[in-house]
Length: 559
Image (tube, rainbow, N blue to C red):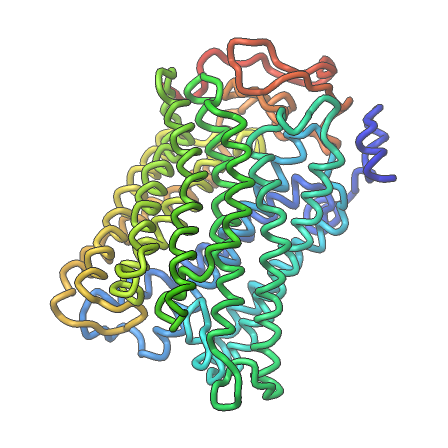
């Protein structure tokens, strides 16, 4: 009934729940999807700062081939928590819980998500899980890497059990969010918003939600088994007692390869909103981009064992996984060529959001190219446990997901805060981040080809020059990221007032005040077309009473 009431949309009183009073109810234990989205982002960036400090600890340790900055045991703890936090406490919560919560209901013309109280519960599991993971340092953090392969993970201290509990909790949060988003998109779209009229960001969230629900189940089972074996001695993974450590790999990667797409599919949606806005052209191949997201979500479940070519997997099983790994690149290629076609002949406006979107295209494509090498069985056998994998992984998830997150923040910050971000600081942020990132992770590919193993606190002296080069470059990248936080704080206090639609964009969230009212829409609009054709009138009816700005002919901050 609550969903139906919100969808009917006669007036403000039809909102799912009344506007709360008081700071705690409004901003702490909020059930407003917009506040919850911002909570996800703020919390995610707090964990990003902590994870970044751990990353710089790694790079300082590797400045010298003999190490010496931290002990070997501490180094193992640092890289384990760094990887775990970046995947489960930073990227996934920001792109799904953060952008998904703030943007998706606005784009489909809804007043909230389908289950607001469940949404609040999903968020509060997230910081609890983060505190649980980082507090493991107090009792001996996990040491087996973010993958926590047995039998090493069976031997660690109590921190590994805390790791299991933290990631399990994040999994429950992601599953509940996925259920909430699917029901919201299926049941609460504005009248006339058919599936082929939804913004591409909504399509991306619709593809991501089932991944979060289905894949996380496998991880939850694997985590529960690891926890039970550690605490009660049930031999799931211990080969000396009849268990199988390879079982963990199958269950972990059945989740963790789709998890790559959980992290990057929403970013595909972000980029699909930014590129047409700042090239002033309709998106090229709308249906192909939308349907390719669903294809990626489906095929992503079929390629997990390409992470296991060195595990003793039978050769007749390896070949299908190699082929399927190549197949999953096809829908991704469809997106990249569609984005390039969107840019072709467009009137490009190089705002900071657009620069980060273009940076995403370059870096993610490079990460995909190196992934082609890893998909080939003979080559993977050579470089599987080397720094080549570290370089590839970071090009996909930092060059891809994190770059897309920055693009999305610069794009939707005016809608969230009502103020523009500083474009000069933003462009310095992009330049230093882009240069520092490539200087950090590009050398890792040839270090891996030459044979430098990953996850080691000391290494052969022949690799010292490029490790120092990578470490210095990481400091440049870190300074660029610092400028981002300076920009956010400065802009909140001193940024130029944004108005409703500073970019001249056409999706529904830009037809509302900045920031939007608690109830989002006074009257639910009717939709009769796609939002990407800048030569046509806005495809909405019923927005006459909303506080809107007419689309600007040239976006703010452009050249």
